[in-house]
Length: 253
Image (cartoon, rainbow, N blue to C red; front, side, top):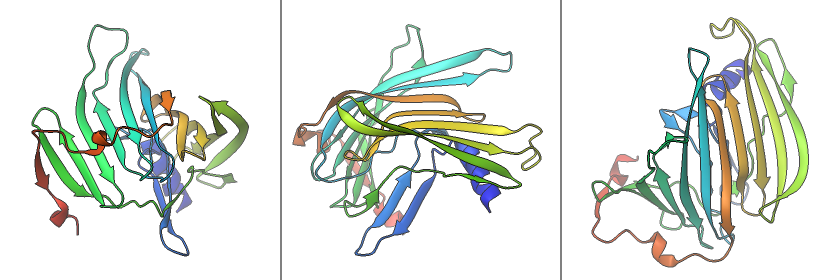
């Protein structure tokens, strides 16, 4: 079982890995790793934590190796905002080639409300907001996803505690994890090694710096910029004017 969990972490760069555990007194314990690839590129995980508002710009770079020994790098920047009620506003931006004249653009706006359990996915091109059920709550407990240390016949995981630091004025705790899948476990003839480094803010409940290096998804860096911890404009959490809503919550059984 541990081998296949490790293989899944390597395949996704841990981007789609979500650990849920019920807590006493209600709510769940939620731990999600950043980065990786599941269809498109996974980004950082921002939970609906109450009482910790912020606004920020997230800078992303994604470098992938090419068969000829070269590489290609894509980048974008987007806004993420959370209010004291745990509502989250996120822009989704297209990745564009780095150091070119190609202009980035925002394709989608996402608005989640943990009290109403709503998730609006608003497509700018069509002016339609798809409405889904949002399952996370402010009563959930959030923390960093850590792999720990172990060695077995399938591979190994090693965690290094990087200590505490200050990132954009926030106290952060850094970790570096190296996960190795031994040859022959999934058809691989060489060890498959994924390295994750992240600096986690317990007050904000997400990583302010996250670096993922995976043989499958490449090298990804997520860096928070322009962090502001004041209460944001409530208008950000309203559906944009002129947009239609397509309700898909009945499909979510």
